[in-house]
Amino acid sequence: MRLLRWRLARLAMTTTLLAGMAALVAAMAPAASAAPAAGPSGWIRIAHLSPKAPAMDMYLYPFGNPSDPVVLKDVSYGDVSAYMAVAPGQYSVAMRGFGAPATSTPALTSSFMVSAQGAFTVAALGPDPGLRVEVLKDQVSTPSGASAEVQGELLVVRDARGSIVVVFDAARGTAEIVAPEGDLVLSAPRGKISLKAGEVECVAGRIELRADRIFERARDVYREVEGVLHTRAHRVRTLATGAYQLFARRVNVLAEEDAALDGKRVLLG
Image: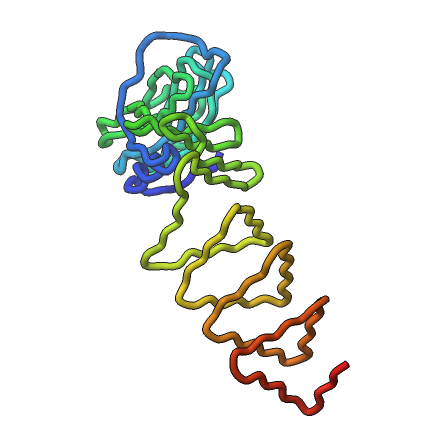
């Protein structure tokens, strides 16, 4: 399993992004023993956070069943794995020196409980000697009740009432942002907002655009209006380097003052 080699300083930021702006909270796991059960998933990730300790091989398996573990090789200081979805229940982690046989005595071991919808970081902490394992319960909800959860390939962020705010589909690479009630504001007071896409579709009851200047550049522009196309301006100027064509059933041109028509030839009729 490929690890993301991040520095310790970014661990809190990583947890914040996953949990929808939540902080990492430390809590020791209960000691009660229970076999993993079917139901909603929990999540585990493994981290090496001891700057003095050498690289390690880390083994994760259901409590009492070490025959088919998840093995992370050559885990060095600052490495944090991706979250792994697991069934709720009790798990064990064993940490051995890099390259040590899987049958050798682990340098560190620990067992802990994983609850449904719970997220945990199993971390190697402390100096060497004095290295220890701690299980950190990652907070995936804010004090107001907003939460983030993983549903298969979906990362879902909900507000305090449970309404979906953000859905990211990791398998398809798609994302959806929703404002269940109120406004959705994109703001970059000191920068710019760039929108890049092969196709943009906008469906709205009303679109209002306000700007000091508007520049539009396109190869072709097509507009279809069922009702009235109305333009009100102090001055209107249209420049066409080629032909200018106007087709209509009726044409009315009204001028309160002069009306000028100039051309090398003026053909009427």
